Amino acid sequence: MDLNQRKISDLVGENYLYASVLHYFGIQFYDYSEQTLHQVCQEKGICVEALINGLESAVQTDESEDIALVGYPIDLVIEYLKHAHYLFIKRRLPYITTLVSDLPEKSGQYHSIVKDLKFVFPLFVEDFIYHIHEEEDSLFRYVLLLKNVTNNRYNPSKVYYEMEKYSIQQHAINHDVHDDEMKGIRNITNDYFVEADAPLHIKVVYAELESFEKSLITHARIEDEILFPKALMLEKEVKTLLQLKVRSN
Image (cartoon, rainbow, N blue to C red; front, top):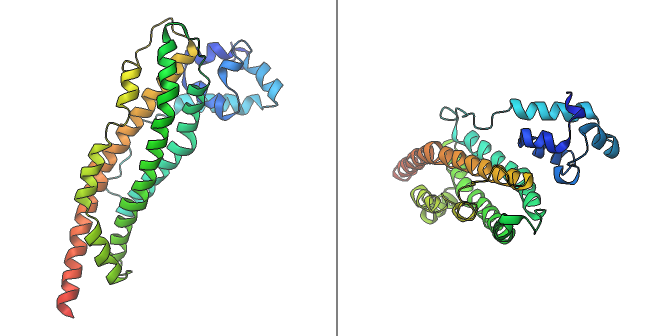
């Protein structure tokens, strides 16, 4: 059967990724579960071909594919991480927030879990966004300042002040504290375990939460294994350059 003749609930039940594609087209799957894709597109004035292309692209995209960043200069590594932050804050988290917010209060055996998620997840999002902005405003800004020194574009007094104030090693230690940010949500959902007969909405929420945690693990690994080693070497290089400059004056 063509995708446009399939019921929305059947499509999402077959592949939970479809729910996020529908969301970005302005369709919440749980509001149109019994309608076909064609019917929903007609009702909302959406080009069915464009939506089907989006659904097919989602299946072909593998977000877990590792990206070889080891050979990239540190400023490009930071740009990659900042782009990931943007996608987390502007796309992934708003979508999951909508899913959690719209969970029915009466969800059978998942009633207490739904209640806890509705309370805890917004707090997690608030804390996560704060952490992201803090990282960009402190660590990323500091590393880019060090990079400017190696390009001979810097204010000596400002660099000395920043190096007294910050250290890559301290940032790395603080980063370890945030490494398991989703522990509370994992505990609430029993490690995202869902019964076979659970409501489809619950299944999609759990799948998205687990997928988001996997993205965070990959993100943290890039920072731990690529960003911090490069930053430590850069910081050491800058200290050497500044010491040489002091001796030459």
